[in-house]
Image 1 (cartoon, rainbow, N blue to C red):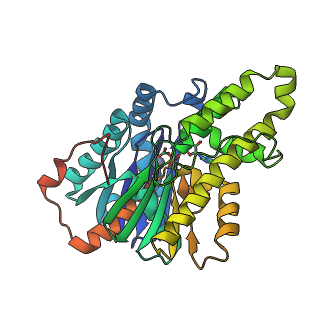
Image 2 (image 1 turned 90 degrees about the vertical axis):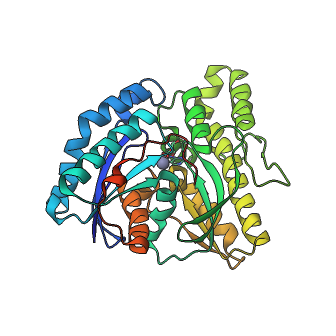
Length: 335
Ligand code: KG4
Ligand code: ZN
């Protein structure tokens, strides 16, 4: 079964073909980083306009790379939400148009579900497991009991973890997106140079990163720039240490408390190298297994959407019907 999937929830225009749920024939990602970086974050109006300009080319490239034509495609999948409404609409309109022309079944997919399913592409993974979804818009601890059954245990009360990375990078003039730059710079820094707070929110499964971000802002504002510049790598390493200690300790404790034997990382921040190492070190003697996708499948991409759709197509054996074209973009879609 060949699924053509489309993902345009934020600032990446992506289309890909996934065969039988796990084999990626193509996964084309057209990034808009250059456009948004001069503003220090995603500008929604610019994002939707560039999706519209690019989407047909990205879909054509995905088919070409897979050596397939539209007539070889069995089904379509597209991100319905959560995300920026204008961005989501660009992908949804393209998917609905193709479904109508080629009479193909079309499944709307939850973006968060897609991030989690990125793990199914590369691993033989079966629920139940505890998922930590960490991206620019999300920080959630989720129990997945079976293929489509989720329970959100906790989430961030303020900033998403990727958002905190992006804001700290912006404060230190490191560019956008901040996560990959801080990941790189922190490798040369001292993670214990500044002891920033560890926001554990004990007794809850929730997270909070805005206080930590403010602590970095306060620390940096007191430093003369001649002192600050040579210490940038130590400051970002210290910020990152605080973030990853909280994420790792809280997730492992939750898994132990709920007797979950598997932890699954998902979303852009799951690409972070220090986070992966700390998880691997702390999980070693617990008997819990750790899963995470390759970095390219952590950040937004269409293959993960195609994978999530495959497991639902398989369950329901869907056929094209006009009613399939009535769903709307849902910027606040819940799991
Ligand atoms: O999943 P994603 O591509 O988009 C959303 O759904 O939000 O995640 C993007 C976020 C950005 O905040 C970016 O700074 C962060 O993921 N990110 C990272 C790394 N790569 C991307 N954060 C930390 N370390 C990384 N290596
Ligand atoms: Zn995402």
